Image (cartoon, rainbow, N blue to C red; front, side):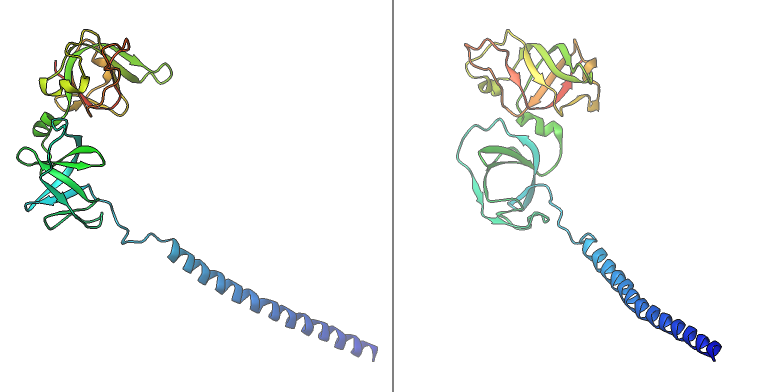
Amino acid sequence: MKKFLLILMTLTIVMSAFACQKQNDAPNEKSEANETNESSETNELDEPDRTDEVTLISAVMVDGELYKDTGYINNLVKCGTMDGKIEKVVPTNEFPKNDGESNFDKCEYQYAGEGFLTVYYEGKYLLFSTGDIWDETKKYVANFTGTVEEVACDEDTKDATMLRIKDIDVPEEFKYIFGKNTEYPNPFLVKLDYVDVHNDRERIDPKEIEGKKVRVYFDGKAHNTELESSALITIDSAYEVEVLD
């Protein structure tokens, strides 16, 4: 009899444990399913929107021609009456399709040479064009020539950081940038932050141009241009340095 009761108690305990295990398994299965669904939903939320807008280069439509920003300032323009206004703005991921539209903001414009437009925006005369021809673009950009007297380098990185340029010659149309200075007996300093140095459009190491004649293109801003200033005229924002030798 005792042996029978012992067997019965053992079976009861086993069955109870099995029942508890089944109850515990069910929530786990549900939890795993939820985790799978949540993971799937999270992945869907994290997946990049395939229709994200891409900002295009600034452009305007005038007289049926699409003019795009060249990235340069038109330094031949100092003032003057604008020829028209851009009143309608399309999304930044589209190019204008109709006259009087831009894809960046409202602005004013003035006709320049063939294929070029001066866009007056935020106090700057931006140069826009219908093409991408540097030989035509560069005539609008402030520049001067001279000979590289010294190339200054960073003590740690050894990278070229500044040019000291002597024998300065400034084209007549850009002399206004330097105020009342009409002669330039002292060297100019040109900082080389993100400046492209090239010879015939082929990039070269600035450290190799000491003693070379160069033409410097810049945005029309110069420091220490006052006649009474003892500091050297400095160009902080050059676009590029073209080696002429």
